[in-house]
Image (cartoon, rainbow over all chains, first blue to last red; front, side, top):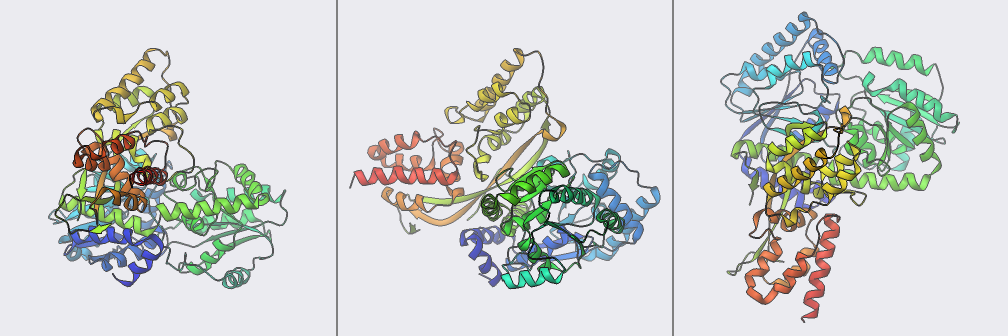
Length: 413
Length: 224
């Protein structure tokens, strides 16, 4: 057994690692390529940074390719992202042309790697047109949608569907996100890596020094939301919730911690809106962190009294999983993947408004034993459901299924 | 448990995981639910009755299947939820009979109500099916008394495979333990009868494992 897998076995048990070996033994000598649009920033890149090396450890020949694009390309794909999450918008033809042209250019660049690959995972809409540009492809192509596409803008979905329908399979995070497509649609929630910088155990001294180094008063409680500065994460609603909570808990602070993702051109405008809404309140800490500030986020999540993820749309919400893994109950928006993580009144609370956040925050602030108990449940829930090893097992299952036949029952060993 | 080395017919301990697949079918009202149940792949009926057992849960489940649960929480129809919740798949020969029972129960309810209940757009019922991946643990049980120690240390998903999934695979729709014990002719028929009384619903898989362990412990203690 390789060393990383040994470390995981200490957390999840050796039976789980043995299952990974059984599945991967059927996948020796196949070439797997993942393609997305950014190496850093956002949940997709983070998951690939972990999944790819682990697949290699299991003996698979895996690589990860990133497509290039100009600002028009990323404006188009940000538009797709928003439209799939239900925004009513039109994407100009010039941007659509830039999207298609960029994919053509990337197809040429990646031709040697993708042409003969046995399995290609295409992540999200950015590289979706690549498949049609490989009419003589050898392997199976899988489209992985990380977005809440439960109620997509129909015009944009129809446009993207033409690129997606020819794939051999697709993967969605939740059944509600899946759209009718003429191929198998797997359901795989994402996961976190318990051994990553963002999730490993930290000494209390490091947590306190990191948090105080950010200007946060460690003698007073703070509410935390970690997310990109994106309107779907509703940072303005979080500020409203904080103000409502502060009426009852005057010492409370708010920390909004986020970074800029390379493929999100709108984050600057949202950040400016957040600063305006904060109105120089000294107890609101707006932190623009670099993409590699994983240990800082880890410390913030461990130090937070209450963790929020007040999204109004959410693909999955890995920040929820991260906080739960650190024993924190989460007050989350009643939407998307947050619903399958936050079991109402057990691992946190589901809310629909800033008032809902404030109501539950007040409860947790004044019921410490309940807060700790919910945190314990939250951690156990993540261990059983949302760790990287489960995610990897499901990816391997799909590969085995596509290569060895899509039977209802796959017998190993 | 013993490593594989016997010429007798040992009990091979397996483990499993379900890979969920969207069927693309969904229902927003009771009529759509009825129509979709009629045509959906039997694997989806199986998933919505049994798949929930592999999901961890914090409360005792209100209902033993997803159809009943959605009827209550999506459609807010408590009476139909109770009726659907009383359907016991272990008493029906196969999934087609289970499908028929569901349809009959829903149709009877539709016939006696003027209005078709609807769910809000974000509370639709999504029909899911699954592939089961079966793992070989490379552990075997040679003699029935070994079941006590073996069952007590099985993973919850092993319990699912041998006590729940088995009912789709075995003659007479029984669990794997009973199917194996019947191979010893009359010797363990009374134990099989006791195992047959265990209602797999309303227990988590861990609770189910504990209950099976207790039954096995008591049975073999009384005979030593």
